[in-house]
Image 1 (cartoon, rainbow, N blue to C red):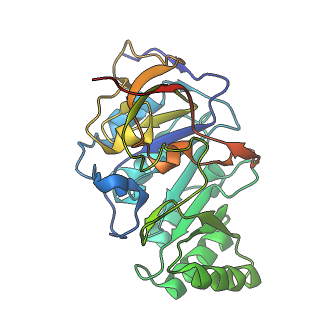
Image 2 (image 1 turned 180 degrees about the vertical axis):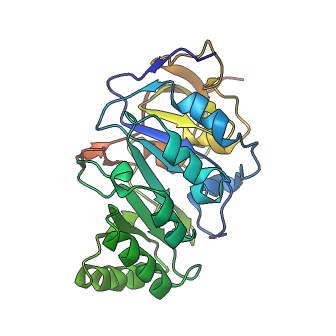
Length: 291
């Protein structure tokens, strides 16, 4: 029995599909572990279940499903999901490119991962100290030559910022799209990142608020979450893609965790059109929690 379609709110900006929260790397600054939270061991559904859930979505050409993690390619059905997702859903991938690119090139049509957009469809994260740069470059150039839309992103962590900028220049000289991202989180007692709501990240104490997301955030078990904090923690979901009755409620929800927000939710960033000034969530009515 096919499930009812799910229409996405017009104002939604991103479809975050976390195939897994597991990863082949263990970077000490991983944003998935912000605040000491580690959701790497969440249950994962198989490829057929993912397709049942994802193929319900009614999206737009400029709003792809973005497969990510963790490292999405460690999911056992990674390529199967890509090749069997309904054609009117565009696909982007966030990856560290740990997989066998020769096998990927053989099995995946580059046109399936290419669309009109101001950024690459495959966005590779470079993690100095945890991966070999020369090997990464060879893989990217090979996929680029095969026709894939691909580029590299590096986080400007204070410890490796100079190296990232040097690496960016090398990549540009090689014809590789390399972009940098702001480091989010704490380093040596200082909080890094540009956040719209003061006190939302690493706040002195939690407050209550009303919060509304502009993203569909789907965890490895097909549970849908109201924010990244809830995804990575043990917070309850707002629904599940495999629930026949699930539909998106585009509404403000009461929250008691303002102050423990995940940086990804409240950072000021570009939207899918690369226009700066967007945040993933909208927060209002921030107030103290009374005993």
